[in-house]
Length: 501
Image 1: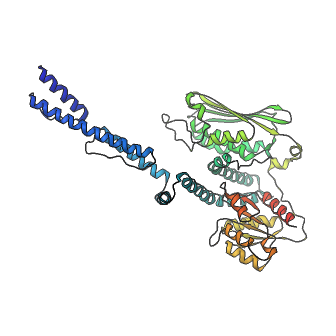
Image 2 (image 1 turned 180 degrees about the horizontal axis):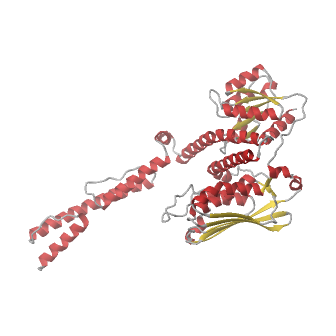
Image 3 (image 1 turned 90 degrees about the vertical axis):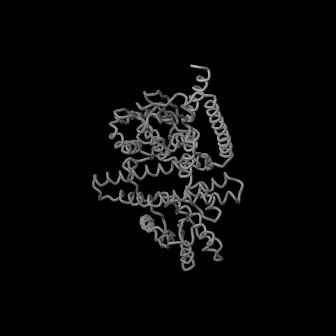
């Protein structure tokens, strides 16, 4: 083969590799020239397109997230990259915002320079609406379930079924709170309760919540509690459930079929408080050593693409860590790929008179309503637009010997207050015609001294971090979130009336 033929073969090879194209079939200098001109033009075109792509991607880094890359007719690797990037942009648009929300944000971005404040505002509004829409029906489910559980005529099977409804509702509430709690924790607006709770009830709730899912994967799931662990502990049972729920949820998700999960609870020390060790151990796929450091950071997810497991929000472990820190506890993790993961939690639980006064009724989950010592019935004005919640609140108040007048919005609440006197007002915040904030503000502006100073409790499913400040700004005395606890609501009503008197 001559030198000319070798050069021509080399150029044709480059063209075929890069562009799947060969222009000539002879072996002359003209053929070499045509092939080289073709190669030069293609390389120049590729260089210009690459520069354009780099420029548009730089715009993306600068903030223009939804800028599409150009796709040519060449159908080469650059076009494959551009099409892949454009597909990612489409998915990003679908995930981040709906069309209506995107238009709203874009309008605000034109008027305002501060992008972060706009996005934060949109996030808070979304969380507020989502919380309200989910918590409102959940308030009815849990509220009426609690009322039925106090019925002494229930047989054991009926009580067990209602217990399962309540457990499912409580877990749903925990999941909802996961979405909202991270921001509240970071802003210091979350408050831990310190009440006695039954450990056996709590662990049964956890077991029942995951038993079916574990059975579907043939997972051997067991809860082992040492006999020296106190039956009743003082603490925030909802947050303890949140910790266990997130840890067990991860174990069930990442443990393959026929695996094992163990939840072990032990008493380590007993002095002025109980030091409890909680171990959650599984035979799951494990966590890579280079990812262990960041698993408690918000929005960080362990890569499980190889295992084909869908990731969640990336908030669960971050919330667990922050709650444990608030409880002055500690959490450690050990893991080995394809062997399993072990979480170890240490939590202190206080001891005191409150513990020793906790009766067996707590374990049986039997609660009796507290009756107020008043010569006449307390008269309550309830402003609530949801019919189910109207019925529930009225039924709860009647148990405490309170009369309840119901209206469907804030405007009607003001009209009712002008016609007659009430001891206290329960005010939903999100209502048609006039919302709770507007109604409360209007009441505080009344000229009648008695009516304008009527205590107001916001009873609402809105639970975003700013709701407390918003309530105080319009003169609302207290805020109670839905789903509400009947005894807690009654206690707050009595406290406000005693303060008023």
